Amino acid sequence: TERRRSQLLGEVTHELRTPITVIRGHMEGLVDRVIEPSDGVYVAVAEEAARLQRLVDDLTTLSRADEGALRVEMVELDLTEISVDASERLRPQFEHEQVTLVVDTGDAALSVRGDRDRLTQVVTNLLGNALGHTPSGGTVMVRAGRDGTMAWIDVTDTGSGVPPEELERIFERFYRGPDGTAPPGRPVRAGRGIGLTIARSLARAHGGDVVASSAGTGTGSTFRVTIPLA
Image (cartoon, rainbow, N blue to C red; front, side):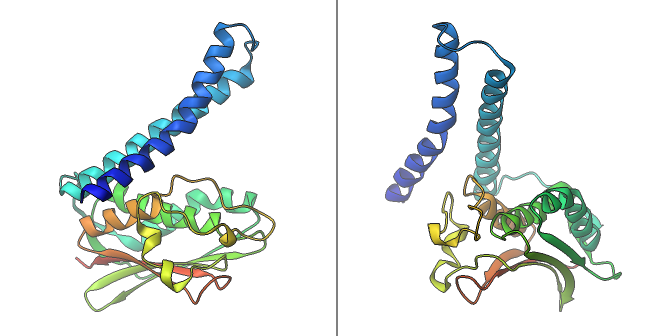
């Protein structure tokens, strides 16, 4: 446990160092008048500050989920609707990256009890992960259905795939796959390495889970969210 805590502290420190260095460098340059004030400088500082805020928010979510103290507003809702809404919200990003987004969830409602914002975040994180690992010209498909007492959402991509030995590791905090998993012609998007960790933590807080499957590098991946039916 102590070894893992020490490793986690090192990972958090590493994630914080870059934005802090950028902000400090720009501000010192402005103070010493080596950098001229400009919109570009202010935007760069604001973007790094926002990056810090997102990291802190994500770490807070993970910490509360691990402690079982994550606040969720449980109401009856339609998981199909959530998957469609999250997909449509991100569609402009897919179009920008020239990745086809297919939503094939059917018309049947999947009634579950959960927190709308939290479950939306689960689907959003999985879609963002799929987009980041799928090359231009590729496809990401969102499907939904039920299996016994569980509702499920599948996010399947035609991207870089995951080696069998990495299928569980990709859910670890700050873990990023090997460099070889970048989509052809486009590097993997810079991320904080905790999107999948958060998705799984939030799903488990609802009594469900997130699991990954892939035939290996270059074969694409499928991430399945399961939530108990109401």
